[in-house]
Length: 363
Image 1 (cartoon, helix red, strand yellow):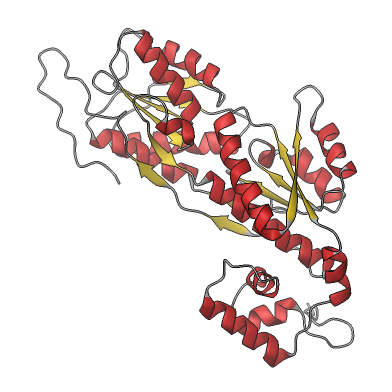
Image 2 (tube, rainbow, N blue to C red):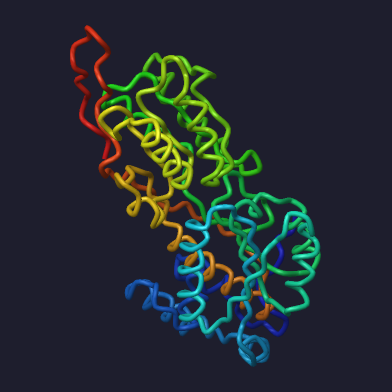
């Protein structure tokens, strides 16, 4: 098969030529050209030297067209967690401000459907779209944006679609780390509140929980698994179901902080002390995690940072499109951290049993 030339008509060099010469990604070259600050000095120097050596000149006509008016970044959301959305907005607004872009926010109403929300985005004249969960997993949304020629970035999708860029963490590994932490404290009856079934990350978090149990010879007990929907209200229902079992769990792991906070409320209502009688942990580390009592032990998913990076990736894709460059589906896996606060502890001793002695907690 004959390899396509990467040169423009007229023999000019492309951004891909510069990237190969400097040993970096085309996105990094674009960031250097556009004066963005999140590039190391040594990398910036290497790219600058490659540009000089190759005689690369950006397509000024296309770049002038792209900068003639403020870029419009669309944010299409349908997230039931206000805490998650707040973190996402903070990061997106911050990066849009740095990039000189405008953030256009559009809510996808359940009844009106995704198509109506997308049409409103197109009418607003956005140049690209951010897709936080659950819309990051919507094939209908991705296909419609692709048909309209709009670049998109999916954030926190467990299984990103091939045609869109994606920013995410390893949800499975994060949930496994939290479950191992609970086992290390001595817990064996560990309940789990699933996330919304319309998000691929929900399944990955449950898989991580189940794998950690299996690795320690603990069977997954279906009675200790409740369905949630990432909302506070669904967390109340799930906790009611789990904490009224004749033999209740000693620890409860909720798939996000909203549901974990709800579980704490149910525990308090039942007269249970957290963590003396019951350990409760969450996922995301939104602002809610440190405002409930006791503050939540949780997995820190860098939501605001992921949103910032998504804006940066999207701006790069928009400028590549204006410069006549091929689209690139970027894949970025960001780190997570297990944050210990006051909501976890050793399990209470059963009558006649010796006190639990947990192994060293995960960090």
